[in-house]
Image (cartoon, rainbow, N blue to C red; front, side, top):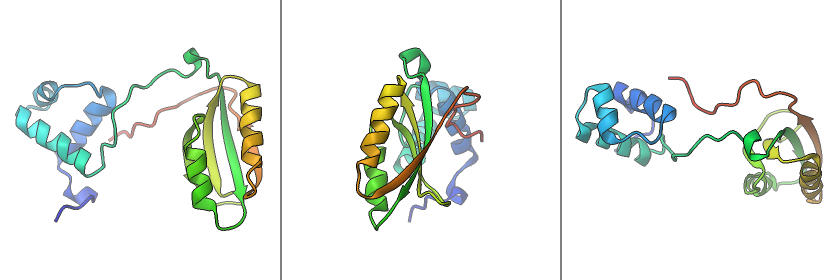
Length: 154
């Protein structure tokens, strides 16, 4: 029986994850060469990490500001009723949301979102508040991005 627990992971898995987080375009040959293992071993470990859902996808990390998304907002959302999961999913499906968290506090949801300008943020917030299950929001604007990196240092 396969398990998704960290206990079932080999030290090679952690090394592979670190390499892929630095450059997800690495070939199995380059992973193998870097770690001193066979290409087949590298292939099998990567495929196992994918199957377990540890490696969820491969993507390019882009500079949002250079693409015109210069406004980053942290939006706290307070809901009412039993529609929390549905509201979270609806927010997660919006193009602006880069992260959605179910949180503990006076608010139920934290959203990190990117916008090109204040007008698009304003429209986004008004659309959120149009939902009958959203009670209120609090929006914080990031003045400077100090760190923005979803990679996990292993």
